Amino acid sequence: MATTVCELHHAFDWFHWTGFYRVVAPELLAVGPYQGGHGCLRIPFSRGVCGAAARTRQTQRVDDVHARADHIACAATTRSEIVVPVLGRDGRVIAVLDVDSDHPAAFSQVDQDALERLCQELGARFG
Image (cartoon, rainbow, N blue to C red; front, side, top):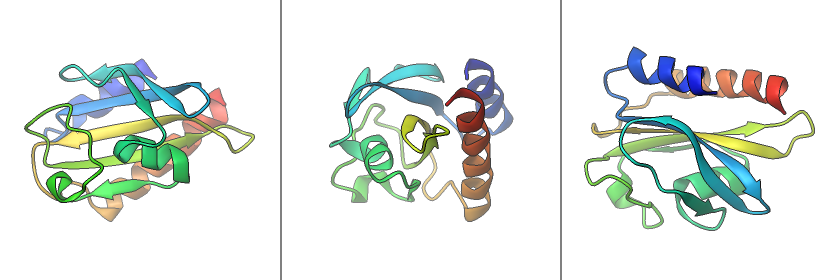
Protein backbone atom coordinates (compact mmCIF):
# COMPACT_ATOMS: atom_id res chain seq x y z
CA MET A 1 0.00 0.00 0.00
CA ALA A 2 2.84 2.39 0.78
CA THR A 3 4.40 1.93 -2.66
CA THR A 4 1.03 2.40 -4.35
CA VAL A 5 0.49 5.69 -2.52
CA CYS A 6 3.99 6.93 -3.29
CA GLU A 7 3.70 6.14 -7.00
CA LEU A 8 0.25 7.72 -7.31
CA HIS A 9 1.21 10.84 -5.39
CA HIS A 10 4.28 11.55 -7.49
CA ALA A 11 2.68 10.65 -10.83
CA PHE A 12 0.10 13.45 -10.73
CA ASP A 13 1.13 16.98 -9.79
CA TRP A 14 -2.41 17.94 -8.72
CA PHE A 15 -2.50 15.27 -5.96
CA HIS A 16 -1.46 17.11 -2.78
CA TRP A 17 -2.46 14.39 -0.30
CA THR A 18 -2.68 10.72 -1.22
CA GLY A 19 -3.19 7.96 1.29
CA PHE A 20 -5.08 5.06 2.74
CA TYR A 21 -7.27 5.01 5.80
CA ARG A 22 -7.58 1.46 7.08
CA VAL A 23 -10.47 -0.05 8.99
CA VAL A 24 -9.05 -0.68 12.47
CA ALA A 25 -12.25 -1.30 14.45
CA PRO A 26 -15.95 -1.50 13.65
CA GLU A 27 -16.99 1.76 11.96
CA LEU A 28 -13.54 3.37 12.46
CA LEU A 29 -10.80 4.35 10.00
CA ALA A 30 -7.19 5.16 10.96
CA VAL A 31 -4.58 6.79 8.78
CA GLY A 32 -2.32 4.34 6.99
CA PRO A 33 0.42 4.90 4.42
CA TYR A 34 0.25 8.38 2.88
CA GLN A 35 2.15 11.12 1.07
CA GLY A 36 1.62 14.80 1.80
CA GLY A 37 1.00 16.82 4.96
CA HIS A 38 -0.35 15.33 8.15
CA GLY A 39 -3.67 13.54 7.75
CA CYS A 40 -6.45 13.15 10.26
CA LEU A 41 -5.54 10.29 12.57
CA ARG A 42 -8.95 8.65 12.97
CA ILE A 43 -12.22 9.05 11.11
CA PRO A 44 -15.47 7.36 12.14
CA PHE A 45 -17.64 5.97 9.34
CA SER A 46 -20.24 8.57 10.40
CA ARG A 47 -18.07 11.59 9.49
CA GLY A 48 -16.61 13.14 6.38
CA VAL A 49 -16.05 12.05 2.83
CA CYS A 50 -13.86 9.12 3.89
CA GLY A 51 -16.51 7.95 6.33
CA ALA A 52 -19.18 8.23 3.62
CA ALA A 53 -17.12 6.09 1.23
CA ALA A 54 -16.60 3.45 3.93
CA ARG A 55 -20.23 3.55 5.09
CA THR A 56 -21.81 3.38 1.61
CA ARG A 57 -19.08 1.31 -0.06
CA GLN A 58 -19.31 3.82 -2.93
CA THR A 59 -16.73 6.19 -4.38
CA GLN A 60 -17.17 9.79 -3.25
CA ARG A 61 -15.98 12.38 -5.80
CA VAL A 62 -16.28 15.93 -4.51
CA ASP A 63 -15.60 18.78 -6.93
CA ASP A 64 -15.83 21.49 -4.23
CA VAL A 65 -15.15 20.37 -0.67
CA HIS A 66 -16.32 23.73 0.69
CA ALA A 67 -19.82 23.00 -0.63
CA ARG A 68 -20.02 19.70 1.24
CA ALA A 69 -21.15 20.15 4.84
CA ASP A 70 -19.64 16.89 6.11
CA HIS A 71 -16.14 17.49 4.69
CA ILE A 72 -13.38 17.20 7.31
CA ALA A 73 -10.73 19.82 6.54
CA CYS A 74 -7.35 18.30 7.33
CA ALA A 75 -5.68 20.90 5.07
CA ALA A 76 -7.04 24.39 4.46
CA THR A 77 -5.83 24.34 0.85
CA THR A 78 -7.88 21.31 -0.22
CA ARG A 79 -10.43 22.19 -2.92
CA SER A 80 -11.53 18.76 -4.23
CA GLU A 81 -11.33 15.15 -3.11
CA ILE A 82 -11.96 11.61 -4.27
CA VAL A 83 -12.29 8.66 -1.89
CA VAL A 84 -12.52 5.08 -3.15
CA PRO A 85 -13.39 2.14 -0.90
CA VAL A 86 -11.17 -0.94 -0.93
CA LEU A 87 -13.34 -4.02 -0.52
CA GLY A 88 -11.95 -7.34 0.65
CA ARG A 89 -12.78 -10.64 -1.02
CA ASP A 90 -15.74 -11.01 1.33
CA GLY A 91 -17.14 -7.60 0.28
CA ARG A 92 -16.39 -5.77 3.50
CA VAL A 93 -14.52 -2.46 3.50
CA ILE A 94 -10.89 -2.93 4.54
CA ALA A 95 -9.65 0.58 3.67
CA VAL A 96 -10.36 3.69 1.63
CA LEU A 97 -8.01 5.47 -0.76
CA ASP A 98 -8.24 9.23 -0.23
CA VAL A 99 -6.80 11.73 -2.72
CA ASP A 100 -7.02 15.49 -2.14
CA SER A 101 -6.20 18.30 -4.56
CA ASP A 102 -5.64 22.04 -4.24
CA HIS A 103 -7.57 22.45 -7.52
CA PRO A 104 -11.37 22.53 -7.77
CA ALA A 105 -12.96 19.66 -9.73
CA ALA A 106 -9.55 18.02 -10.11
CA PHE A 107 -10.86 14.48 -10.58
CA SER A 108 -12.63 13.21 -13.69
CA GLN A 109 -14.64 10.09 -14.43
CA VAL A 110 -11.48 8.67 -16.03
CA ASP A 111 -9.61 9.21 -12.75
CA GLN A 112 -12.45 7.63 -10.81
CA ASP A 113 -12.56 4.57 -13.08
CA ALA A 114 -8.79 4.07 -12.84
CA LEU A 115 -8.70 4.47 -9.05
CA GLU A 116 -11.65 2.09 -8.66
CA ARG A 117 -9.85 -0.56 -10.75
CA LEU A 118 -6.72 -0.09 -8.66
CA CYS A 119 -8.67 -0.45 -5.41
CA GLN A 120 -10.44 -3.57 -6.71
CA GLU A 121 -7.04 -5.12 -7.40
CA LEU A 122 -5.73 -4.15 -3.97
CA GLY A 123 -8.83 -5.56 -2.29
CA ALA A 124 -8.42 -8.86 -4.13
CA ARG A 125 -4.78 -9.09 -3.03
CA PHE A 126 -5.01 -7.85 0.56
CA GLY A 127 -8.59 -8.58 1.54
